[in-house]
Image (cartoon, rainbow over all chains, first blue to last red; front, side, top):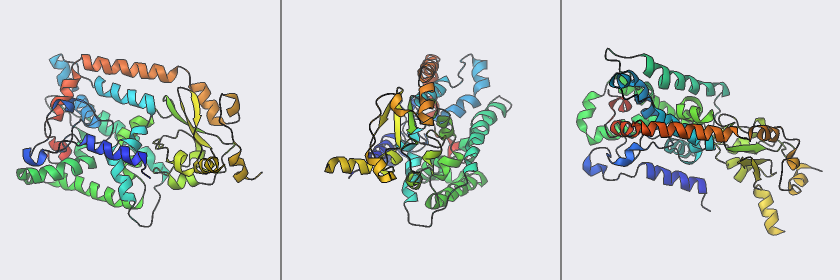
Length: 298
Length: 74
């Protein structure tokens, strides 16, 4: 049976990277769709990318805020902030599970058979530091003589940029390889380290480093769509934790910041009807696999 | 009653009363009012303000240029 989430993830990857003429143009897509930010992490310099990266766009606004004010255009990133807040306000961190191409890749790599390890939960806080410093403070505060800052996260950390833009563009445009230096190899090391970690642990980038996930997670407890836990039905069997792509024990809190609302626990794990969700404040519950089977046989 | 039996006897909650006893549901009831909608409207207004300020074309201009920083070469 087709997993609807996998299908949506795959379609999302294709939609975010639908420019298939890049081997012939040897350049990135430059159509009007690039003015729309995609909800997940997908580098806009990927040759196939059809949309803009929200994190890259946000940093660009922050980095250019002084020149923008001098020019009287007052571009401060309201478009991107509004879009991210709108999505977060509606569904919280759900895009991470359903439409983020980089998240999808991590889940696929985790399927490689190996001994699995767990990331210490305290590391989840790192992503808020990355968000505060590399997305907001550094681009805003560290500027050159003309008042321009840099895209700090893109430049020094983002593994999606290295994987989706750095490597393919360097092969499409060989002269770019001449620019490879310490910075490139440093970013490549981050990418390789994360790729290795992805084999052994669940979504390491999402849980520890992703500033986009950090932004969406701020809305988890107050979004229109929220998860619900029914403790009177929960037996704390731990099945939700075993199947959770983020390693969450659902019974410890229904809307934890790391919950990406993949609904895996609800659809595939919980046999006791202890997990549900609310939309518009209306509680909804979908019976777990066991109830479905019993209802069908009864 | 063991947990297995428990799982087969639950009923679909139809209102707040049938969900009492759940900490999280109490949480939902208190926060399920206007706050999410006010937040959505606020960010929608921010989004519209950004569009009106011409930020869409600014995003486009950045996105159609190869980002050397993203690649790790600039």
